[in-house]
Image (tube, rainbow, N blue to C red; front, side, top):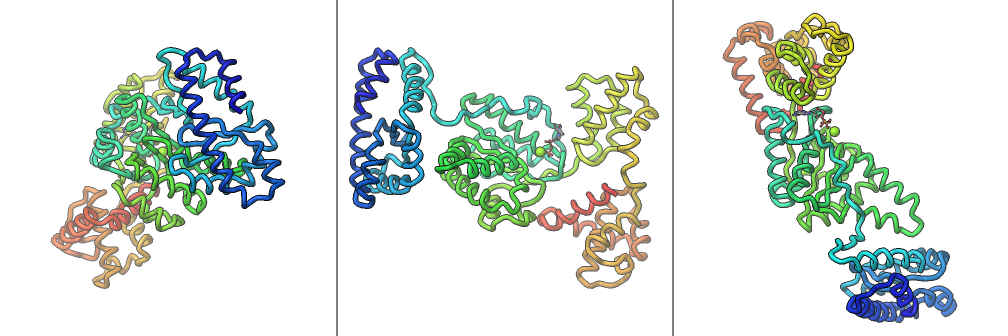
Length: 480
Ligand code: ADP
Ligand code: MG
């Protein structure tokens, strides 16, 4: 065996005697460790198994707390890995606390690895070869930066938290859980965090993954792995990082095996104070098929939502996009688009692009009439004018309380709650005078309206359930 290492060292023309010496020390250590492991399992296997398989395995070195073993044939490697790995790992645990993993390779594989490693080491001032999977820090969208992110009331807390994470990853805000509807900037803000952290420290290892990708990676590693190697690789990929970002975690619903694996990865990372960030389209409490222990982990840091941008912010977003993309569109047109498209930022941006392209293609200066025509489909698909009837109807449906009861003098808890919510949403969304709201809702005077509005408003401020009710209802009203 030592002969074999010598051959590799010679083949790769290593010139530095200290390195050879260091290599030899490592070989001795590996040999000693392997001898002890074999002694520990010897009595638990038959003589023939021992001679045919285990004796054909040779110690090579210890690297990254892993004992590297090698054998001539693929068949031996697979057989031993598949049948004896558990025994080997157990024995290893009993004879050595420092080395905690074992990797069996064929000589060819090992020679290839060793050649690369030795070649790299023999070059002066060359960066050390990292055995861990490479983290691709280039995959973040360079457009998704803090500078390009418009901040308004709807996202200012998330923005502040994101900045906090950048300042001190893994310490104050961990995990950060951001939730909100589609197209509201969740992916943008976490890419912005990554871009900024990489700018501050280009060597940082960030593993960003959509949850879809995380799940399919995991399933692939189970399906293709004969000997758990790929599952180990999978864990390593997500565990050996400084920052883990999982986007759209709602897709984890019902995927219990993946949840289990994520749970362990989560615990390991948290223990090492590594930053974890999740995004989701809903609050952790609304994720229906998530194990309780996973949900409680999601909630163990800071859970923040991104709401919907108001008109002023929508205009600011359009101005930013126009500036970025160098479109030539006047501000009254931007205001018109912002007024008409009030769903989410993605649709807002889509509408702006459509206007810009259509006008460029047809060589027309955008006017309100032209834009109205271009965005006809987007505008028509929305509901008609906002009315108190419409809002009350949606609230009634949401709380399953008939409209007549909302209008009536009945004071039971669920009816009063629906009524107060209707009052709150009408006063939020419509600029109707309080007296006319009172008149519409069964002839109530304006002090009752103020009281209801303020009551719900206060509840929303410190209760996510009410906040969610209001958010859901407003979304339903928007969708028509
Ligand atoms: P989500 O992940 O919440 O579905 P994205 O982050 O993909 O949404 O955002 C959709 C689009 O809207 C992206 O092009 C993004 O740049 C843009 N966007 C979202 N929020 C903002 C914002 N606050 N300022 C500027 N652009 C934004
Ligand atoms: Mg997204």
